[in-house]
Image (cartoon, rainbow, N blue to C red; front, side):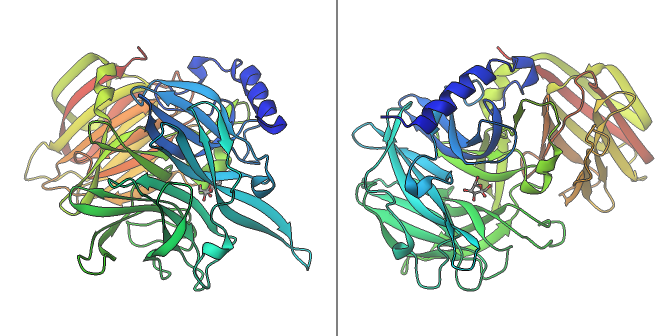
Length: 497
Ligand code: FRU
């Protein structure tokens, strides 16, 4: 039986999404059906299709009582919207169905695990959110919350842990048929910790242990954890709140963190070996991964950040989109990301330019587009005279542009969307240290109308940013000073069919 709240959301979205034309949306990135979208939720492969749910407030472009929006895809690039899956309609989630995950049950049903939020008034007039973990089972379209909800509450939190910050369960099935999940929480030190729970059947849960403790190293609360084995290592992805900056690695505010390590053979404890940011750009948060039937680990993040959300354009009927699906791997102890290989099937109009000599500004008429896949290999024209700066500018016309610029002497790559048309004084630039030898650098840029994703040095790092530049700004130019640069370009258009 669906609730009135769910029926209303389904009715509302059906009518208002029809008013949004395909051209007003990204072509191959999933955007909110209507209204507001944040975190990816329940990213799973279920009965022949990828399911993506998301934090959703259909009624306007602001965050509000959280529903779960829903879409399915066969290739992770072409998405079909399905009706809202969850609405805040029970006493334990009446103030929001927060982030969570999904898995297929042995009997063929789809199990969703999410955070129920219930706002409570405290004795002294304050308000606190009580967060618990809840379940819903369904058939890929309609989901029923279970009677036993919430299945994890304050009794299942280790001593000193917060009942207010206890959220974002990521569930997985083990080879022996049992289940685990990780949940973000805050211990007494006020920072973050990841709790591990286990279940024989996906329904009955018990606390196992604290899997990883932040100990105030990387921000405070750790949101949206994901934990999995990859290339012989164990990987924890999480999104810390309230970060302090650290060199070029971590920036202030809401950030992303990847911890790579191993499990101690005796104690089974997670031993950290390496830490890094997941994305070095402006808009990337709360990623979730899925294992594809052919064994790839694919990650999708919310292509936005809480610190830059006030950038929405006044007349836009939707806000929030997901990143490209990215194939992830571990190489040389680092997280690598590559665009999903199926994206190559959308390529058309190959354009190859070799040894383009750049000194000053170079415009090439044939090089343009806002839905493109473009690879650049740059190197100094003269090995004896290292250039000062190289830049590629795109989404460009006389008024607008976004730029990536590289200074080989500092080995710093900068993304700058100050001139992209945004009217808010938020973060528009970010810098990252990149690996470069003798002034050489390899960049792959993917544009999809409202965003750019940059894959640096074959996926060693990424930089992601949303853009709200008018679509007729579609030029691309190169710039170099302090010495010449040679650029090899391979560029494709990315078409929808
Ligand atoms: C992360 C987050 C989650 C929470 C959700 C609420 O972006 O804050 O921790 O479940 O968003 O919409």
